[in-house]
Image (tube, rainbow, N blue to C red; front, side, top):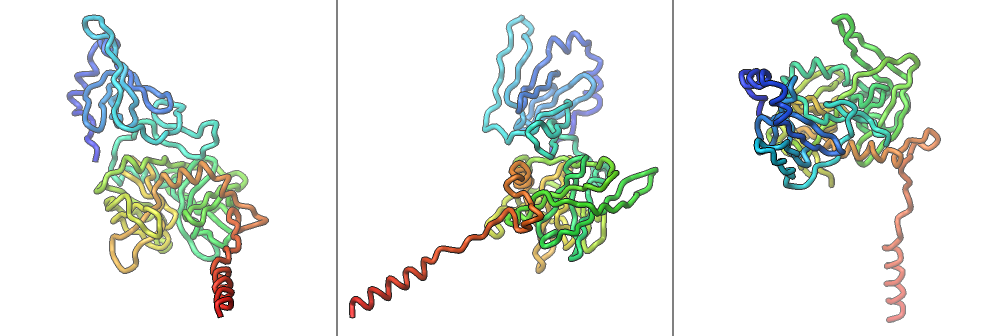
Amino acid sequence: MRSPFLPALLVRSVAVVGMATLVARAETLQLREKASITGHILAEKKDLIVVDLGYTVISVPRSQVVRILRSPDVDGVPGPAKPIAGPLPTAVVPPVNPVVGTAPADGRLYAVAMVPPPERTVRELVGLLGEGVVQVRTPGGLGSGFFLSEDGYLITNFHVIEGETRISIEVYQLKDGQLDRRSYRDIRIVAMNKFADLALLKVEDAGAPKFQRVLLGDTDALAQGERVFAIGSPLGLERTVTEGILSTKTRPMGGDLYLQTTAQINPGNSGGPLFNLRGEVIGVTNMKLTFGEGLGFAIPVEQVKFFLKHRDAFAYDNDNPSNAFRYLEPPHRLKGATDTAAAAGETGR
């Protein structure tokens, strides 16, 4: 768990410093994708940098910082740029405001936080994120999902909709202090990847409102033992919240690596989000071990990002529901080898 912000007493003491002093001692943190933050560095720790922006104090992970440009020192000599050691992190979506990035011109459907949001309690986050989690229904069963964008794109598991084209989405929206349950039945399958167990859907009902989206996080920033929680519809019990820890980030299962968690995962959770305590999706829950307790698994969010960036390769075609997979006849090596051996045997006789 990340260290909390500096004590309120220290924050207040910094807030009363004259603006001229803050400007004279301002530093600029250059982030990935040409983004930057300018303010006064209050503390530099091993894994984060605490920056006073004048109106608030934020913690910036060092993994997101490319270099620090310092203002002139007291003697008037410019301070050198200080590069951040270590490999650069995975690229993030450029922001349209200082905090949250949205889908840029390259067509990405998801959003990430340029500056990680502060950690909150599960109780607070459930109230903030609950509307972004949905129940996915088909004639053959049900699962869960979550919105990536306000215009109705959402993620679920492939196995939740496998073999189905009649799909409905149950959304719970807060209205006048009450939860308003609405069903949307005009759902288009945009893309699906059977082997990654992911599917991209879109709500296309006439008059559909703007939906609450959730942010995608970064699995590289996760630590074993970090607290996580899931929201979904296990056994049809919608809006169920389960909490646990991240048991491991790299559990090999069936040739892929999964996040393992002690948060309870059951049938119906499939396709739902696994959150960290900053409210970011770090995985898509999709399976559990039935002969044990607290052994749930989720697809890492980096696989979700890859699927979304390359969704054209997995595009769904109503005229060919098996798209985007074309199964070819296997090579007849064994048959050829048998015929050759038989011919050799006949020659030897």
